[in-house]
Length: 349
Image (cartoon, rainbow, N blue to C red; front, side, top):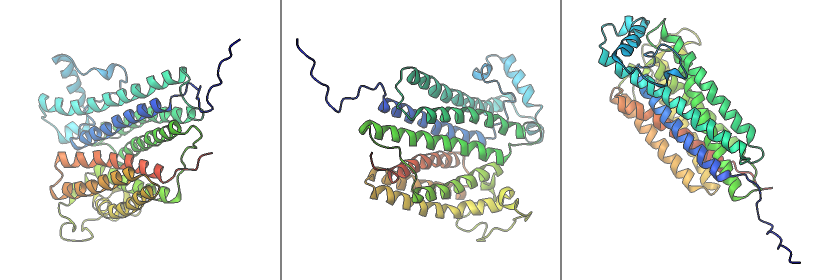
């Protein structure tokens, strides 16, 4: 009787599909970058308080009739932002700010579906490699938490102020960027697994961890600058209104470092150079590990981000420059995760 020839030793009978998973995660990461960009525009146009209710399902559709628009506008006219800053706003102007907040929330829903539905499919098909189920579930949980944090941020300014809390804004933005980094890192681990099924997940080295910590401080300062509208306190560079250290800082103890727009602007513009140095070191580490592409990408986006930051200041905060600055900031996070992963590869088993 004829016998079947033995399978090659390298045959992989597992249904796991690490390459497909990696491509899916990178696509979701791209949506998160877009979300950060639209979120920046929403903040810059002060659109975040235009929708006064959180309706995860029924809020998918915008108002579809003039009566529905009048109803939404009537709710907005009850907010403190309208009374204090936008009294007399026209319906056409309201529709503009409503659009940005609506598209921001719609993107959040789209990202949730783009992650949850494929995850369920991969999970049921047994296509997720061993050891990755918990990580993907954690990313799903963080994404769900982001929706709650977004509404928590909106409520901070809905009825008692003209804008949301800059502290809650920072939590919202940093959580989005943490999710972005997690998506990229996990996708890269899966790509490595597809190339070698014995490879171990990457682990942060001290160099990579230090660089990412420096970057996190800069991102936090940037979120505070956005939330405090601190970019408007000076439109000169490198001096701030003729002085290296700005005049106008109101010292109120430790809260000065969190709540004063002059000081947060000063810290953000000069900590940027510490971040540049740290990320250049990270890029060099990635290059030394053999990943020239990650090194080149990180150098490019860091240089572009620095130039955009200066341009945003000296051009007095035009919408295009400020929005691009936030969008490229998300790309800095993604490429930093790529470079950190490159220089943190562990030897195979």
